[in-house]
Amino acid sequence: MRATIIKLHLFVAAFFAPILLMVAVSGGLYLIGSKGTTERITLMVPETVVFDEEAADLEAEVSSLLKQLGQSADFEYLKTSGKTLITRPTSRIGFEISRTETGLSVVEVRPDWIKTIVELHKGHGPTLFKTFQKVMAVGLLFIVLSGLWLGLTAKGLRKSTLLTSAAGAVIFLLLALS
Image (cartoon, rainbow, N blue to C red; front, side, top):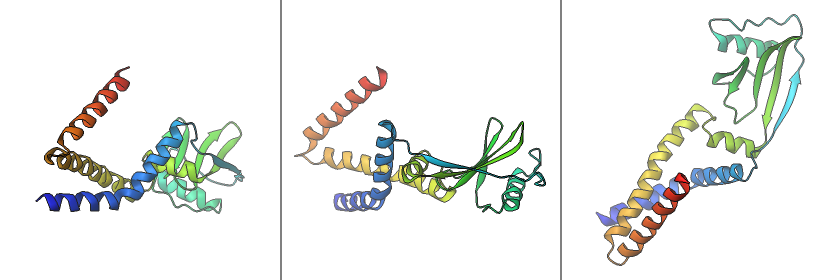
């Protein structure tokens, strides 16, 4: 049984290593203030363009608007932030649509690679990627718990596993509660 858990631990860790590294890099960059940037391009919206922000099917209305402007209408869903509609995922080129005093504003938003991985990290990526992130979370729990179990059940590693786990727990609690 132990050999099976070791193999599973190693295979799951190896499989999820790329996404775990992306999460570590994007989180670290974000925490040191490197959140990435976006290039924002305001699109010209002719007065003849029709857009009803009260439409029952707002996603279809946004798709129609983007097509009228000659843009790709490839988005998965919309997020509303105040009076602005944001196409998602924001980990790739998207659009912000809002009504201003002068008419309709449509801004194309192009994230750089840092902004892209930060958006993926924050769960703002494609739906399939978000599902993969959920599976990865379960995988990470398995990696950590199986690693602890392996350390605690190995006579030569038990004491050092207990000490390092206890130290990690104490530091976590001290920092989280400070």
